[in-house]
Length: 377
Image: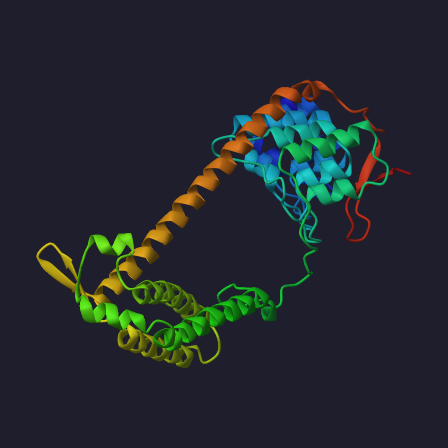
C-alpha cells in the first residue's frame, strides 16, 4: 500500500499529517520496520527530517522503545553514510545515546557504541543542556537490573565518563576572558610566572656575592675551548645565568600573552618589554667576560649564553610537541584496542532484544526533564 502511494507521487514523503509528522516519522513512532525501509528507499532525504523539537527519527525510535525500528534506521543510515545523525541533539541537548540509556535500551546502546568508521566516531560523552552525559544518566537510574548493568559496562569500555560539573543554563561573559582562558586558571598562571620572574631577578642580583672566585678564574684564563661548554669547564656563574635566563625568557613570553588580553594590555606589554630589557642589561653586566674558541672563531660569553638559551627553548618546545603527539597516538591506539576487545566480547549481545513494551505507549515530555513513557488513555 505504501509503495503504491509513494510510487504514484514521491512528494507524499514530504506531506505532514495532523500531528505535523512526516510519513517516515509516523512509521518510526509505530515501529513499522518494513514501511520505514520502503520510505527511506523511495525518499532518502526523509531520513534527515526533524520534528518541531529537533528530534531525528532515531530519537523517535528510542523514545518510543522501538529497538527493531532503530535497527532498520541504523542499517539504512549506514548505507547512505548518514551515521552522523546518531550524534544529533534534540532541543534539550539529548543525543540518541542519552535517550537509550535513560530508557535502558541495551540493543540501541550496543549499536551506538559499536559505531565507528573512518569518517565518523560516536560522541560517547556528549553533554546535554543540563550538563549530563550518558554515563551521568546511567548512574541516575535507581534500580539497575542485569541489562542496565550491562549498559554501564558497555559505556565504560567505550570510554564513557561523567561530566565534570553541571553546565549552567546560560554562559556569562564574566566567566571567561576574550582569549578563552578561565579567570581562575589565568590567575594561577600569572602568580606562578611572577614567582619565576622574581626568582630570576633575585638570582642575578646575588650572583656576584656568592661566586667571587669566578673572577679569579677569568683573570687567569680568558679563552676556553668549545668542549669546555659541555664538560662544565666554564665558570659556574655562566651556567647559572644561562639556566635563569631560560626560565625568565619563557616566563616573560607567556606572561606577555596573558597580560595582552587584560584591560590596558598594551601598556602592560610595554612594561614587560622594559622589564626584559632591564634583565638583559643586568645579565650582561654580571656575566663573566671570556671567550670560547669555535674553530677559527671566538664567541663572547654573552653571545654564547643567548645561543644556548634559544637552543634550549626551541629544543624543549620540540620535545614537548613530540611527546604530546606520541601520547595522543598511544591514546588512540589504546582506544582502538579497547574497541576491538569490546566488539569481540560483546558481539553476542547485538542479536539480543529487550522485551517489547506495550505498542500503545506514546512518548510525552514532562516539563524540561528527560523523556518518559505514558500509556494512552
